[in-house]
Image 1: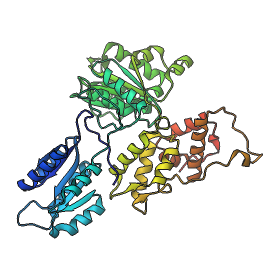
Image 2: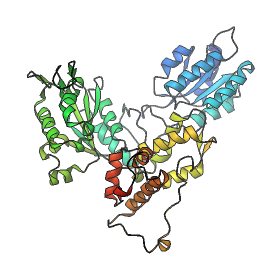
Image 3: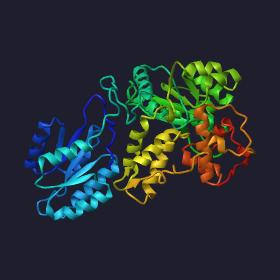
Length: 468
């Protein structure tokens, strides 16, 4: 099993949870880990263990297989293990077993348990196993403010660390924040960090994809509606500005909002007041607005596609999230995290597979990486994932000197990274027979986003099959 990545508070160490109803066993392990400076806590029952793992600082579980004096089948331990997997699939579990439940422990390793030890255990081997399974730090040398809550956001690169530090600095204020980055790059994670470290963290965090809302439903979704306000509106409904009051409203894909929708949004941002659709009653809202986009908004403003006054209202603070191809340090840690989350049984990423991931340009960013790992975890025939399992064994482009003379050059001037991205998209399209919808799903982006990317890279959209 790959070593997990720690997603608890970065300024506090990861903790081992010992689950055993025998006080002597717990005391012996606590003393052993204390000698080796490994923090630990304990639970004497499955119910207490499940409460304990709600603390994200718990990074490794050592659990007994039996909790009733007259039972030695291991069924209680198996049930606990499966509940832990359901709640914290990334959490490694070492099973502690006597001979009577050894067979059950071996079976659970096939279901995803990290390892098992037999009682009585060898101290040195137990410490060695624990150290091997305790999570690696997200990156050596990265520092966070004391008490920072990363909201489960995992990374290892200095480039993303800069964005996280800026999010943490501005979180305590109520200033609007605009997060910019490509689709699937992690903008929602930065938005969650802002909320979790703000004075509003006990309030609601409401996300709405404003760019995907039909014009006819925009007002109802944002501001609410009274019964009969539009066809099918049988009941009164509260809008996002009302639901999010006292908390944070995350307006995703703001760059795709129509000009008419922008005007309606600007008014409520300026005044803090709105009216439900079908009502003349003015209501007030108290929200902190965080917006995100993959659109170059300054360019959109220059073209007249985005209101300048709305842009300046939203972009008090701007945070850029770099694409995955610009932060290769994140690929191994995210791949291990996604594998732990999605593998039903113990799996690992082979060196050739990791090398293929590191070479890939990831036009779909983190979402594409997650989708590739999820698929591989489900269908790979062997425990160790290969490039083929990840869909990365496709042949590369022919060398320049072998290119056919009759190939038409693309009339778009591309950078080296864009050329690589173009080749990757073409390879995925070829692998799915040119079906754009299927290619978009494999790349972890919407079909519309893939069409936009293809046009920007000079790919012939009209020659692709549009329907699955």
